[in-house]
Every structure is written in C-alpha cells, then in structure tokens.
Length: 388
Image (cartoon, rainbow, N blue to C red):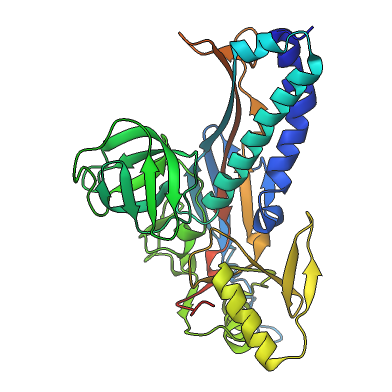
C-alpha cells in the first residue's frame, strides 16, 4: 500500500540521485562543459582569489649582477552571494488516496511530476546561463487587459509563474501570475487571474520568474554587459575584467578566428566552445555551404551534436541573444556550490509536507550555487550578426 512515508522514502532513495544527475548533465551542452565544485564557498558566500597578469619576478642580467626582484602573482578577490535555486513538485491528497492501493499508478503519478520538474528546471537553468543575475526575462511594452506585449518572448513559456515589476521602483505591479498563452509571432503573453486595468503595465516594466528578481545565477550577460562592477570589483579599475567584444554584420571563419587569436594573444586563453543563437548558426552554415564542400559535425558528451570549427564545437542555444556568438574558454568557468541537489527536509526528516490550509503535499529540491568566470578577459562575444 502506498503511504506518505513510502513516497517520502522513494523521493530520497530512488529519485534524488537520478534527478540530480539529469539536472547536472542534461541542461544544455554549455552547462555540461562547466565544472561544478564546492571549493571557495565560505558560509553563504563564494570568495575566490582570481589571478591576473603574470608573475613579475622574471628578468635577465649580467653574470655577477643583482638577481631580479621578486614580484609575486597578482590576485583579486571575487565575492558573490550563493543563489538559492529551488524546484517544487505538488501532489494532491486526492491523487495519493486514489492510488493508495495501486503502486503502479502512484509511481506513474510521481514520475510525471518529476519529469515536469526536470523539464521546467532545464528550461530555467539553461536560461540563467545567458542572464546577468537580475532575473529579468523580458521587458513589457504595453498591455491590453491581461495580454502584455513584451520586447522578446525567448525566455517565456506557457505555465511559467511570473511577477511584473515597475521599472521605476522595482515594486510589484502583479505577483505570481501564470502565463497561460504565448503569442510568439507578436511577442505577447497572456496572464492568469483578475483582469489588469488599462495601461497597468508601462514600457520598460520588468518581467521575472516569481520571487526571482536579483536572485538568479550570474550568467554570460553579466560578463559581457555594461555594468560597472563584476563579482564585487570595479571594471574601470580592473581592465582585465573586460572581455573581447566586437560587432560584425556577417559571421565568417575570419571573424571567428580573429576573436580566437585575440584571446590567445591578449589573455593566453584557448577557446574550446562556441555558442550562438539559432539564426547565427544558420548564417554560419550558409557561409560554409557557399565556401566549402562539406560541414564537419562532432558528437559531444550528453548526446549533443555540434558543427566543428577547427575542432571547436559550435552549437546553437534557444536562449542565446539574437545576432550573437560567444567564444569561450569553458575551463575558466566554475559553478561553485554549497552542496549538490538536496530535498528540503523538515525537523522530522520528511521531504513531503502538507501545504498549509490546502489538501496538497509538496516536496522541494534545493541547490545553493553561483557561476564565476575566473578570467573574463579570456572570453569573446561577437554581436550584430545578420541571422538567417
């Protein structure tokens, strides 16, 4: 007979390892290349010493002259607060009781919930890799009732629960509204709940996942963005925090190679991964078809496939900004975490808990982590590319 105790035990012993492995290896090809580590985590913060430049204790001299003066490595300290990443499943008491005498039915119910959690987590963690940590996934243009026109629907999907925040004060206009429809052709979303008043939403208002404003992973947009600070350091006082950024109307082998050469010559960085939007990948494929006889394809870990640029995998990602290509040295990226995925447990050790005043039970996965690039100057971004 299925009970809450047996379901609780199944989540701990059967599902946790499988789900954690899926979340760590099957988000997207870029996430697969990033090492996960518990190093440099101190309490609630990541404090990491990042070397820059070279050791200065080198010189040439005369046979009996003074030796070079010592000049040790240069270090700067990166500081980030660990982000709190959550994923919650919910099962009604009615569903549990209905399948109490049928373990197969309950397993199917539990597996359906876990698969839904995995799908949502892959979507959101993949999206965060390209964000700046602010949690802003779109900006509003206007609204007609509950239909909001946004600048881009790339980061939005049906079922997502979102907040809309004022661009002026960051105060909530609406909270915890579910997206019921996404009109991708016209960049519009429809929200659940009571109808919004006319012009309730203004141009520039921020749309975020529920409660996530300022609480997401520090992704690529933070590295390549225009913010004055990165990892607690001032960019203008630390030029090595500024990556390579160029614009190009068309993506060619020469454009890519120029960026790779710049990373090597300036930072001693070896590019090993290229990621871009789907339209940029198609533009590069079109260039290859016009100028070559074949397109080389390579297999990546996790079952992914990529175009090969001189042995460097080139992949597209749904969350990469339009007209943009990133050329990265992924060995410089680390996901620093307090621990791997765990279930939130109560004082009694249980992970399944009743929702207050509701006939439903929830279980929540949690991970405390954030992403750091040790060497921002060793990364490149090409933007303004005409898509196909």
